[in-house]
Length: 241
Image 1 (tube, rainbow, N blue to C red):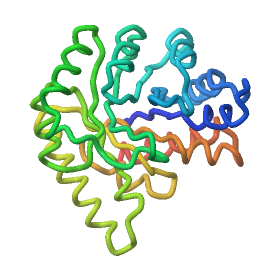
Image 2: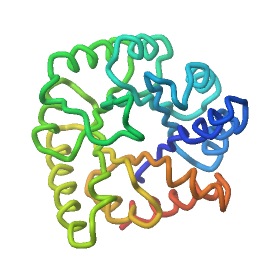
Image 3: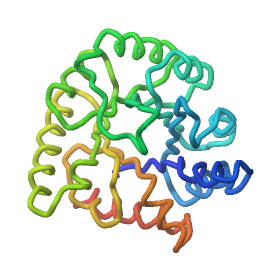
């Protein structure tokens, strides 16, 4: 079955709007866990706009499922990951001006630095994923530096006009095949929803998706547990397709 990582950043976004304690990020994570999620994903950004250090600390203590820490490859956040020891880190590009992550990490131009980061994580038993655009050169570079997984940034697919959707899917599938051939695990995330997930879930070799905004947005209307379960139902159905 394709596994689901639930990104709970936007629970923290709502909390930080009032700088209070509600909604409770840890409670949200445990609801997702009880609903059947396989992983909790959080992005500890340099500007701490949503997830805070205390959230990462607490999640490491209470989660019974995996923690996936999205992070920029900065010395500060690397040191936190080395101390917290999440199951996986997903290295992402990060800009203080962006609303959300706007594209994939350029592994090609940062091979030496990212290889060093990967070695440091592996030395502490942490698996490493590269959040990349579905481009063959980025897949090859990710394999070259020793990453365990790549996660395709699916934003171009999610935002494509009707006449471009198939072209974006073709690009995902072609790079997905290259990823599997390179011996890397294949993940996907960004902009995926209950409405556009199925074509991505059909991608051969896909083993994990990470979804945040759509689940939290739907939770406003149907509750967090049901929002998680409807994604799991889609993944279960198409894992058997």
